[in-house]
Length: 231
Image (cartoon, rainbow, N blue to C red):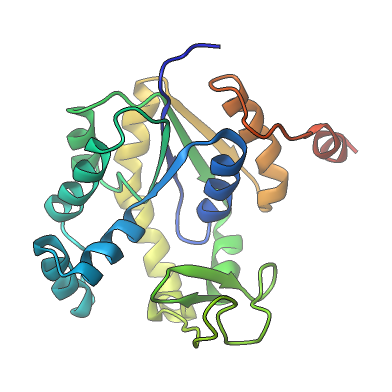
């Protein structure tokens, strides 16, 4: 197995299961899960220059501009030069993808292709603990107590963007922005797309792919899942 450090990216629309897949990759393969959302919240809590600016955009219901989120993520990546990592939520745009290309080569891009109707159903039943970013789904990952975060006991919220009227617009916006990013990584031969409606059925294929790039630190038996798929 090559000793080269693995630089991976996961792409997928809201509700695609990126968080669940990232957790499993981090656990099984020891990759650092680098979430743009987590780093943004840390900067906002710490009142850094970037955090103060980002908070202003978010409070106005706007996306954080490319130059700000890029500044946050490149600063963090500088600290991770000697570790395997998986980027989540970055790059979202072509400008962000081109910025990261200036400091390192991306070896592997996992793209989650989930049917539109499945995404709508998932988002409509999604609730979030805003301070931590923990995500719950009332159908397959509900909180222990309805409306309450498992860890802190604080109230959960539903993003305005996750409510039925906003979901369709949000998913279309993602598709428009993500398309050139996906095409870029496809042209470089590092894009691997996984399609389906259930994360548990997609996961064995992702696991197998990762296993060709890096040795698992916690090996998992996926043969049973493959057999279930074949039946």
